[in-house]
Amino acid sequence: MGSLEIFEESKKYMPGGVNSPVRAFRNVSVNPPVIKKGLGSHIWDEDGKEYIDFVASWGPMILGHNDPDVVKAIKDTLENAISFGAPTKGELILAKYMVNTLDNVDMIRMVNSGTEATMSAVKLARGYTKRDKIIKFAGCYHGHFDGFLVEAGSGVLTERIPGSPGVPEGSIQNTLVAQYNDMESVKALFEKYGEDIAAIIVEPVAGNMGVIPGEKEFLQGLRDICTKYGAILIFDEVMSGFRVAYKGAQGLYGIAPDITTYAKIMGGGLPCGAYGGKREIMEKLSPMGPVYQAGTMSGNPVVMAAGYATLKKLHENPAYYEHMEDIGRKLQEGMKEIAKEKGIPLTVNRCGAMFTPFFTEKGKVRNYEDAKACDTKLFGKFFEHMLSEGIYIAPSQFEAMFIGVKHTELEIEKFLEVMKKF
Image (cartoon, rainbow, N blue to C red; front, side):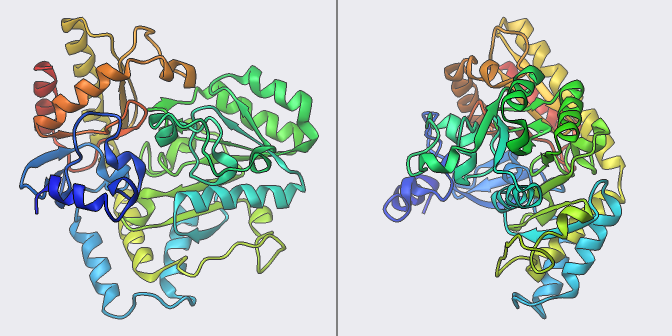
């Protein structure tokens, strides 16, 4: 069966033929390739077509597909364990490694996804502060938990869903929405609700309205106002953690959140998430404290092994980040130069190994409103052109694209060569 046949038959058994909406390519006029194999920075579909991959499983495959050290760790673990639902040494090894190599994480709790991590972090913040309201930012996506699906960016923005049906009004009545990179909008909410606000949750480098880095003054302002009002600052580093730098965006900016959420890269390509932070906060979690959160598959031994192999390799090879920064800069500058030559209105936002080309006349994209003003039809044509030429990029203007350790200068040149034909 080829890609088209598999996708069409999948529609009979899965809504839209997929298990996550953006995979259906609803926002563009081509059908999705059904992927069969990956190696390094390349993937192959069921028709045998090869692509240079700039999606990287939406971020996790920073070491490339089927990294031999990660594969070995998985195979070695599978000889003895798949799942126990009981404590294992692998949990300790990964938890200890993360606490010892990351800033602002005294204790950590493993979960199975980014959504679990963020929703649990918010519950913990509410339990710790004994307050109900949270602030999120328009365009920031923190998973599909009901309380986050307000101006949520990412697939919600791509699919043009205003929030989501099925989310009761009561589920979002304690969610306040501010504007990204706009400290005045945050101050106004604190002036009105300050003593009721449990937490701010923010992507310090937004990746779900396209890549939009938080401005340092803005992020420092969030830290200061949380300290002033006794609220918890949660950095959602599900996407930026271990990617923009090993220590994530907080490492780049030098700003300390109270709780950080992780997922994607930390699982080595397997389903994984975690949230960690100050000991006094984390000790409020059951069984030590009253805030209940549990998961049968949390700390799965195979996932822990893959995660440890991935993080250890990244931490021990800082040159990886230098390489990704170098080729990322080359790609960003090359795209801007081509767009200028061809008279295409383009802004390329990048932070380390995350980037998004925005087709816009505005010149800057620094928040949700700027992102929504972009030319999505032009992006769709760009996407279809790149895909047809073997460059696999995100099928939405509002998603991040990713560079990995295995990408080479030759592959960056190929990307730019294909773009020149657009």
